[in-house]
Length: 423
Image 1 (tube, rainbow, N blue to C red):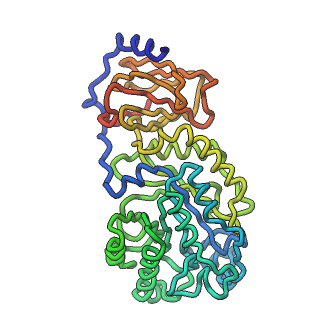
Image 2: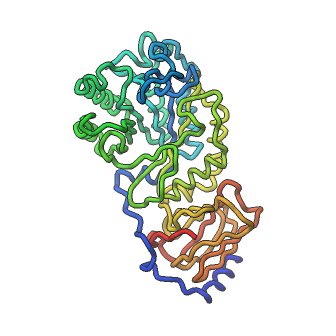
Image 3: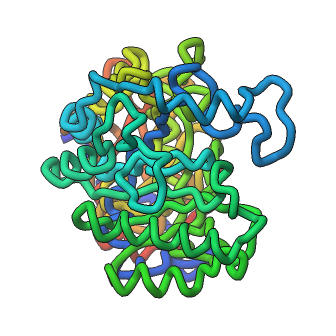
């Protein structure tokens, strides 16, 4: 009733500009094979390996590392032998897949092989792997997590690092190494059920260095709908800003990859982002028309750190209420502001209010009539729409300290709105 009264009064004073006068463009169509990924918006990244025994960063703590000598790192002879002690007896792939699902994530990306060259899968091309006779654990971790993801109806995606600090052919005999590298990628695509996405991490080298054109052709022969990121010398299907929220871009698909703490791999002394930070990071990504791939690092025994798990539970609780403002939406029409971002789908624009200064927030003019405004649990809120802008008023009792989402129902299709500059 409140919304209807506000709407009626707003109509008498409205003189909104036509959409054709607004800057920028309509959102670019999403390619068909990217639709599941774009609709998902939220995935789980997992960095894990024998290095978790020492609580140091994966690969980069190996001395020497990809950027040169690392006096504070772990000598290669020690690093490369850690797998002989790595025995994650408490690893439970089903529990991890279910945790991702309860968090509201729709896909899992797992580090099947990082720069250190250690394989978490049963590759026939190396014995530096989790199923080696020298490994006390001896079980195929990738196989377990792939099966659990499929059973949980999550999209299974693999991370594979083209660089390999353990393989002597890397760089010194690159053509021979590329054969090895390509064979392993095809193993991952053929031996573990349907793989929906491959996340390469080979920045700094050209496509010819990796013979990427040949590899991509082979990969898509296995799965024509396979999604590939932009880190193997070719543009790929989407870009991957790291440890920062990508800029608003509704013309080119993108995904921010970010750690839940400071380190990619498990660090017992890590400082974790708060629940508010995690929720707002997700909101900023989808408000910018991107995805968030949030990373955790499993402990040496294969379990999730309690603080990391707490953050995921908080995200899951928020997503149960606010998921419709994330899944299947596009960023905008409002460009991200200092205190808010927006998403939209069909006849609804979702305003994600990240910072309150009192009970009201003012948005720039919206060139389409608003029919109603309510919180995601259905509570109506006051709004006034004029040619000068839109004012939304929400009592403190309905405000969320992380992200208060207000659904604005429009008279027409929000997808016909061009982007609108923030106030």
